[in-house]
Length: 318
Image (cartoon, rainbow, N blue to C red; front, side):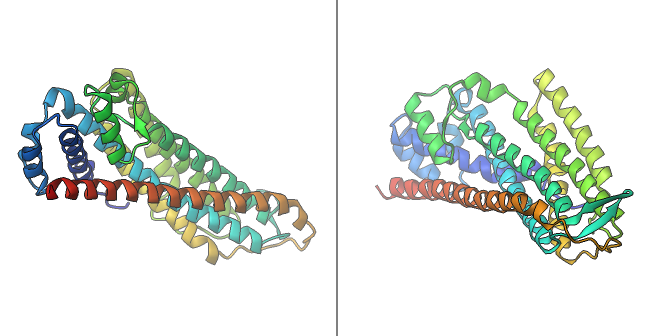
């Protein structure tokens, strides 16, 4: 099992970023004392900023924004290892075009089998994108003027401010979706490993995927209970965080092991190459688009981080 950073530690940089974005936006709009904000922002370790912010109007938003940022960053990393695994499946399928093998007493096209697993991972990739889109709304500063909410959201890399402050601060369904994504991926990994192992070789993963799938399903159950009760998100986020790190490790190991797999063949017929051509073409095109989207996300987050740093510098130089 891989070791992970506790989510409280992982949240700390996001909490700092979220608080500094609040201070900067409120100072720009003259909603707090500019000189005091300048002093607080002059040092990232400063504790002066908390005294300038109204806790009833900002504290929950700062924490929720940090949680969303951390989940968003986790999913960006998850998308990257999905890309690794999907590309490895496509490339190996291209090498195995037309090769037929025996699986559970049935003769199957090996390339088409690998592409079928790539299709499953493609659906999980789409779910990541869907969830990231829903998380791309800033929950920060819901009780503050619209201008402050929009500015803080932009500084934190969100597309726009969430229209409902109450929903943004209390909804827990995104953690349920995250747990569902982990559980589905872990189950798919168990199937990938099982079918490849049945062909006479194995995927070198650090733990049994079926055990990982069971743990992820348990975390999903806890997420559903959290949503039903409207409880404190951190314990469930911690659980998803740990499961997510294990899913990322297993996905990476599958992708890295696929090029060197030795799969014996006891079927000589190689006349099935045309059957996978169209599917392979679509799969390669989708991975290319996915790579472009991932790069665009990285640029968006980098631009937001740079904008925050540059705006703070401008305020300090006045």
